[in-house]
Image 1 (cartoon, one colour):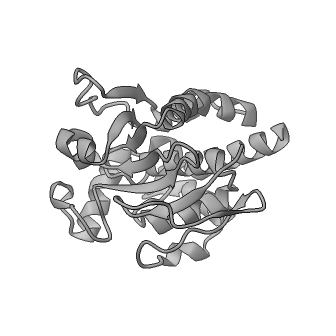
Image 2 (image 1 turned 90 degrees about the vertical axis):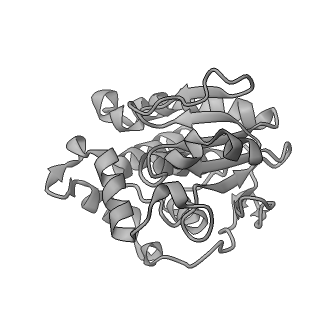
Length: 241
């Protein structure tokens, strides 16, 4: 799989180039968070418990609201700066289609989606509506990533779980259509989905993909059991060659 990965501005082209089949670390789109020093093992350790709850009982909507509260942010007014309604993570090397991660503001704002040329949307929740599913030209795929614990036991299960989402994204990008994955905050569920896509399309290891995703969208953070899912995918894809 050839790849060209990059942290992008919401309006610009990719800012990095692949080297010898591997993708270089993206150029900074903003401040480098302290999170860069963490590794996947530490993420997995931290992810086993969150606010006194086991990873399988994390309320991701509540975590999104807590995150906004800690940041003193109203997601409806985020239009620029470090915390955006949507941010670009990757661009297809041939069609130039762009892959975005966004929040509820981007998901509900048709004019914003149209401004960024988004025609394909991955809803990474089990509760948020597909806001524009009846609008001609907007295609949806629901990917309840938090539900992975119900059926994902093995590494192979993890790969099977994410493949329909990857097929949807791949087909759209290959056809030159921009894609956005979203959840409530665009941090945990959609953020982890963005990391998975970087691993798959840019051929990055989990740790590399986390760092690249956070460089493009600092609010991204795989919490709860998501580091476990990333580790399973990394092993499965590595074994598959």
